[in-house]
Image (cartoon, rainbow, N blue to C red; front, side, top):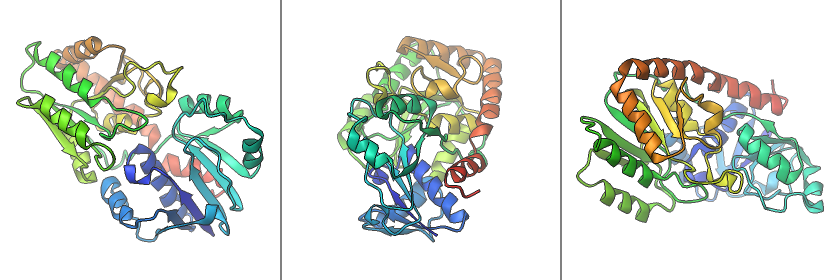
Length: 344
């Protein structure tokens, strides 16, 4: 059996691309030959390095012909419904597209050839189902909970997410401003680390961040390898995210966090998440139990200061975060995604 994979965002090397590569490895584990459509084969090495995966037996080719001649085609939507030609077709939505005129006669005709529509969260599903008048299936992204583990903790506040300012800005500049406010509260011996991919559209933004962080205990890491990411999660005590900050998620759902793989990765390393209360964050973080949700920068700073001043509370929340992360492992993902392909 053969499968074709199409993802127009592959070189952004973000959470959605990790999801797609997990589909690829799950299919390979089921004995399916996999071809990934991409014009430059160098992306294969980039994916292996970023996500710590082995793609040795996966082919990267220029054109899979919309799945023509394949048993399966897994296509990441860019907001449109493609015309797919495989025997079994799947469309994956990692972005809650809306206002794209989804419920058209043409789309209905194209969807007739689609076996399953798969969303990455309940938040995404709610928006997609309404826009396209469909009933998509939720398969949460996989998190490498067996590899990302707690280490000896240091006074580090961490954020991991791409620096590019594409559809969904991660708002690292706001985290820098929040950290400056935290330092004003007599917080000493703490470091803020901002790490993530910088391959696409991030040069000028990173220059701005470095200028703002100058002479402060702030470290900016561009395109870290998976080994470095594991180390960062393991030793960090607190995880921040401002993804979607200030956005009305009803008006612009695509601009808030759709799921937030890095949040769950942090939780699996006993790193307490303090994240903006919108989108997928509200599915993974139970406020005050396994992490904290905030609605203003002042609240972010206040919650963080409380955790710094109360190590017992910080540790109790970290233990709960670790426990909550267990349900997002790769074994769960492979089982659920292969059920969609009828490859149990």
